[in-house]
Image (cartoon, rainbow, N blue to C red):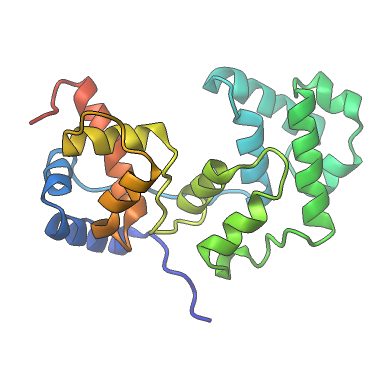
Length: 217
């Protein structure tokens, strides 16, 4: 099986050129924003990245960062599956984890350790297989799985249809009266294949332009 395409400086340039040629509305956004700087976070392990995503859910960046740091300290400096499995509940709860997030981290570590979730092989798996595996983990839904694909594995063709920022950006771009639902967004995004991750990034940037008073142009 061929290795999946990843977003790199070269493929990002290919993506923006292709998207500009296929969608005149998106082309205006690309011209206003400039080159895509969507670079995946490759430091650390896949487990640590997913564990961090669980800790950060529904918290402000500062509060989440504080709790994440405390959890790492409690586990000896880093988030690894064995350390999570061996730590007692009191230690992890004292670091600031809610009961729900504690259960989610436990479930993640158990699935990795018993092989139900093979993070060693995940780089070569297709997007849909990765999502199917990740959403089995307590606390990880489709959006978190899609963000993992985009910002950890650098997959080029992910469309987070439930992401409010992507929906708002598409609405502004196409001057729609209401937010597009899942079906409408998927239809609007057909010309963006196989670069829907990059197009989604530009949808987010539309809101930045709007905040700066630069959109509509």
